Length: 250
Image 1 (cartoon, rainbow, N blue to C red):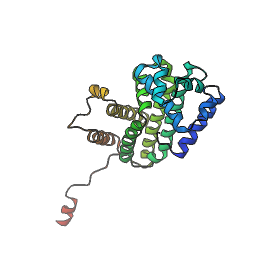
Image 2 (spheres, rainbow, N blue to C red; image 1 turned 45 degrees about the vertical axis):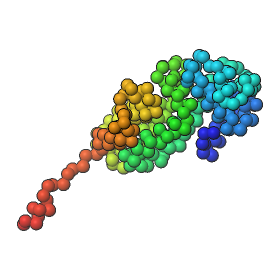
Image 3 (cartoon, one colour; image 1 turned 120 degrees about the vertical axis):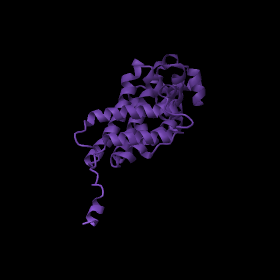
Image 4 (cartoon, helix red, strand yellow; image 1 turned 180 degrees about the vertical axis):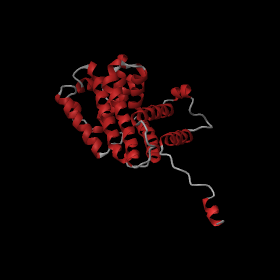
């Protein structure tokens, strides 16, 4: 079972109730415990990630989730709605989790915030590997069915988190004057996506060429953070050289 905080669990269960009222999932599914519900959702996402959204295999999903095939048809009114349900629940869960971190990250110095954002994001994504694989497939394949329902909302939530970090840094006087904040947000958002995705999805690293045995993720991550902070930071006027020595010679 994936770890959920009390707040995440409450939000997850509230969404299941809403989707039941909309006829997207049955009362039988809603009555399952959260561990079994999440196992079914993860199995749907993993199968779609491997076989493609149009080739979902009910038998494979049932085997992954550890339930009978007949149980899946008791959980969902329509076979065609299974994956849509899983994607919607996952998107809401992920966006809610991102929003929970926003205030804490915005309060940290920019270097610390970026370090926590990248390291925490990788750890979170590994814990939710089924969601990550499905999201990566539909995002990088440009799947139109899930672009507006999953990919864009999650990406906007990630970008909002980056914006909150930069706005916090600006309020503390960490950013240089005249910085185009919105352009910086977009640049940093794209940069962090490439860095995180290359670490989590090895086939993408073959394209980005960020990591190897001599350049492990923590090393590259810190270099990227240092570069970003240097580019965005307020310029500090250096002290006059030999100031103390000059005074001493008077």
